[in-house]
Image (cartoon, rainbow, N blue to C red; front, side, top):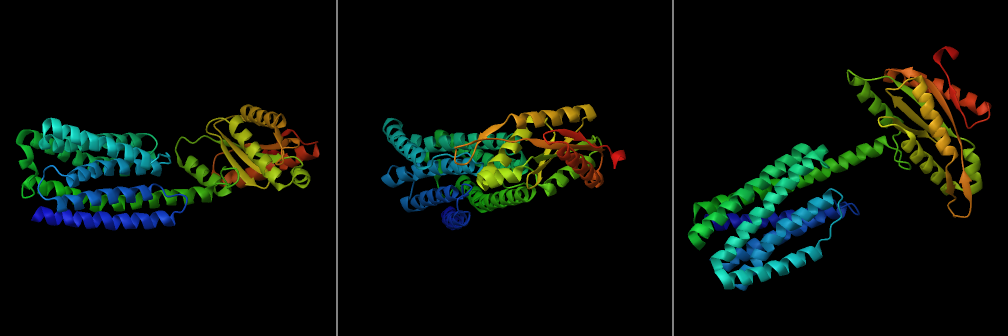
Amino acid sequence: MVTTVIIGMLCVYLLCFCVMFLVISTRLADQKMGMDVFALGNLLLGLAYMLQLLGGAPGWSAMSVVNHTLTLCAPVTYAIGAMRFFKRPTPVLRPLLALAVTYTVAQVLVHLALGSEARHALLAGSCALLFLLMSCAAVHASRTFARDLRIEMLVIAALIRGICVLNAAKFMMIVGGGLAALDMGGNFQKIFYLYMSFLATVLPPCAVWLVLRRLTDQLRSLAARDPLTGLLNRRGLMDVLEAHFRSGTAEPGFLLIVDIDQFKRINDTHGHKTGDLVLCHVADTLKHAARQGNLICRLGGEEFVVVALGSDKAGVLQLAERMRAEIETLELRSSDRKQSIRCTVTIGVSDSFASTQAVDECLQLADSALYRGKRAGRNRVEWRPAHDL
């Protein structure tokens, strides 16, 4: 009786969180982060437990076969939702239909060959293996593509490993003692479904927390980056520099201002779409020419800033010349694909600086050098030391 009540509550949890996930997915519009798939997983598992309550004692029946198939498909659905959360587009319906058909056929064959106990052992063993793989995947994610969510991934891995252990224990009990291990009045079943209720209570809020965390990170990134080029904006640059100079081993940097020559004429002649295309190609060229660790920012309009960290005057001037030359050789098509466009840049370089408080002064130095380069004919690199002011 107690176990039956627990399973009933578990069904309510799963179906309520299914509705909640669906509502959240509709609010997220095009960026659903797998919430719609998590809702499907909750629905499948909730239906499986409802069939278990309606089916009565363990045995062979069409309702029991469907129950086992849904029970195995649910965690696979959660795994697909997790992949979609981490921006790994994965199909849903075809894999689930293929798994459902395959596992249903496997149940029939196992039952005919080995009996009902073997069919129940098959489910417990399959779930144990599946949850083990999911736990290992969560640990791997915490060390690779989900390092920003390391703690969350490790907690989820531990929770999943718990249900893996319980399914493995159930498998061993069925193999050793038959269907008596599945007696709803037994202590093991109470513990098993209590833990499942615990997971159904804890994991959905964890999923919501992960979505909120990802949305917050995206908002923070949007606030720090230029939407057209994806480069840092001025606020993002200052934040990164502050973090850099807070470290005890921070190296000084040199500041370069890169300005596209005659950009207004490009806009007036070819249109703003082509102008945006030029800005993006120049941004890509700067990223390609820069060394690892250099910071690149779109200051506004046609002006970019490059901060070269851990270099010297000769290395910075060489970097600036390489950027200028690569942009000069860049050839791209206008937005209507009818004309070939080339552009050049003038680059002003400042003295080194070792704190964020010195950035404004270095911007003035680099800007002064930039305009000296403009007056000297454009498409050149100019250096402006502090004593020239």
